Length: 462
Image 1 (cartoon, rainbow, N blue to C red):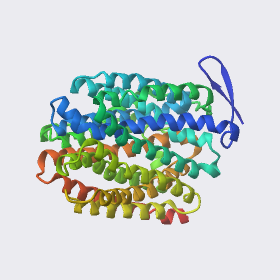
Image 2 (cartoon, one colour):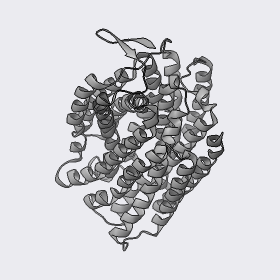
Image 3 (cartoon, one colour):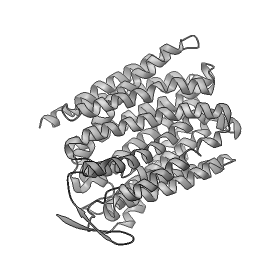
């Protein structure tokens, strides 16, 4: 079946097929993985730098978490609208535009000299990253044949894990020799290389005949923004009046969205959530990412302020976690083509919960090797879960709704991460033993995700 695909300069013809030919696949996947890698690495770079930035900008540790949350909230707010836009104008167009936006915003982050400046720059950087990540998984579905989709998502996990691994390491090295402003400059050359390859290699997808629903997009952005701000307001103890007001506005915006959005291709894809396997996989993703983010945001503070480590040493030890995610993700991606994601994910999340609980034994006398082993256990658990779960989310949705599924995958991840970061902010502000409470909370969230994941087994059998 041939579908006309409008381009900015001409009209191209897209031949619908099961992935790209093997000789064209490598360049396309190179730009997808490279762009996604810098977006992921940017978040992990900022995590380790938070204590340094807080001191340099003379702000509190809890307020410094806005550097994380401004990026995450902007990402989440724009994910679903941009995923929907990709179905209408093309995934590659949204992807490349987001990449350019990300590059420019990275430069603005590097030039920031105040907390307000870097928070605003990180917000715009998050918008650019949303263009990249909203359609990342959707592009994979058009680059790889269906029989290799699980393996492709495993490779995706490898790249994401490697990028996360590079983040703390690069951050530790740069913070040792230069200002934190340089952490963001590394995005610029990598982004330009990715763009130059992507403009030639990324595939076109068949476009939806519907028009982009701008009204639903605006209401959806308002709903997601209010939801995440409410979560963040609780974490930063903004006051009950603020929290209750934001919560009420969140409910009102949700009701408005359900009223105005299209029934055939809704901005908030409730049609996909009616698929039990899809809905359970999204719920599993939310809980697991909240658990991981809570730990990864808290650990730099714990390692530097409680264990007395320098930034470079802390970054090197933390690398064990994402490297384990990456290496396990490749194996899990291959296994997900043959073994139920509910079972694989449940085992992985149980391992993650155990690893998080075991971190409670760490103290200033604990050896570096023990810390590395515990981080690796957590990473192995999360890596065993992530690739099979992502594959299930994408493959359980109809192909025509690939954009919505990709956006929902990212939204669940980012909403969970915002919740995790907000838990850390709340504990740092209110608790006298924040590190222990964060680890306990993360272990409980991981255990809950394990239960939800195992509940999917009966739907796989169906």
